[in-house]
Image 1 (tube, rainbow, N blue to C red):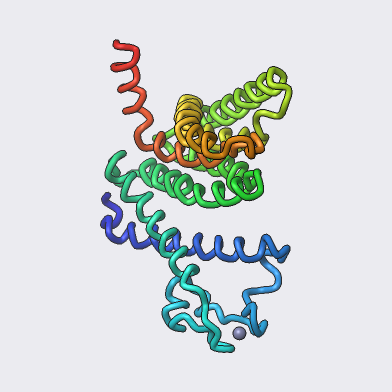
Image 2: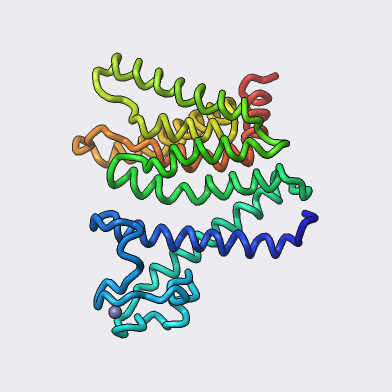
Length: 272
Ligand SMILES: [Zn+2]
């Protein structure tokens, strides 16, 4: 860390995270109601008055208003600023964990890593929320991940653009083939295309090996979590288990500790 002190970076990442959280609030409110994300501009859901920009600031707006809307004095749920604060903490955690576990020396590649980590951590919530409820993964996250991965690979020092491309195509294509074979064997759809695009995004961010590790850890997590769940929900299971949330949780773990986990695996399981 040479460009500016860590505490300053943490504040910046917190603020950006809180803004993402504020955007999630808008998405969660508007999407199920079929309202466009941009139009109409931010307005009070009760009296339809426009909300001025400064009162829309994440966390701060709610605090200024002390939890009551400026226009009609109706209470605003604290779930909104809490969600924004949690996203802010996740943003700060992205920089903190990258600095702590990967080590930031102040060069551009480290900031690219911190950005990738930011993307991975803040992607967990929308993937889980949408996949559990609607059994799909938002393209903004999956296809967005491919784009973000390719862009971040342009920074020198980390995954190269070629590795990023191979990671996206290899991991996505591989999972697609796997799902295709499984669906032929099981005679039902085994893998959603959303999972394929999501893993392709992780391939673009971490390269092919990283994406395969994400897949393995996600599968293990899935089995560990879903086996007891299946026991409790005998019979009523639709058989459809969302796989996206497990991928989304595994991704930042592998991003930080992928190499360490691989070394441990080689040493203790393969005994080499
Ligand atoms: Zn109002």
